[in-house]
Image (cartoon, rainbow, N blue to C red; front, side, top):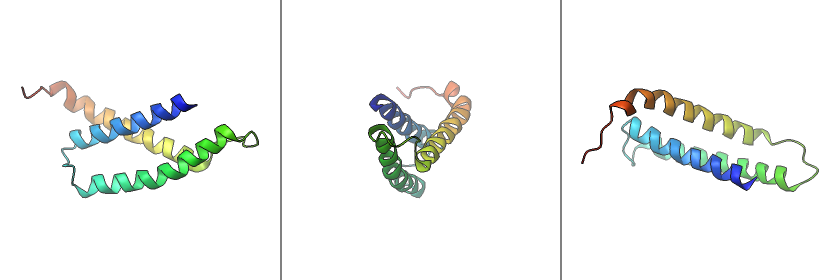
Length: 95
């Protein structure tokens, strides 16, 4: 249960890095701030619902906000893969 949460958080951080680097957005760009704010609000609710699902034996399903967060994370990952497939084979280190 904890391992799944760690994987989701790691994938989310990887998507943040890939989207920022593949779309050539600076760290101070408004898109990054909006994405961070959106994930902060969605993440608080989703983690609470996931916690209730794992700890409460009366809870039979994961909450809807947790599923929405997982779907948004999957969409970000697919966009990163689609854009990265085009850019990353041509990328070379600047050493």
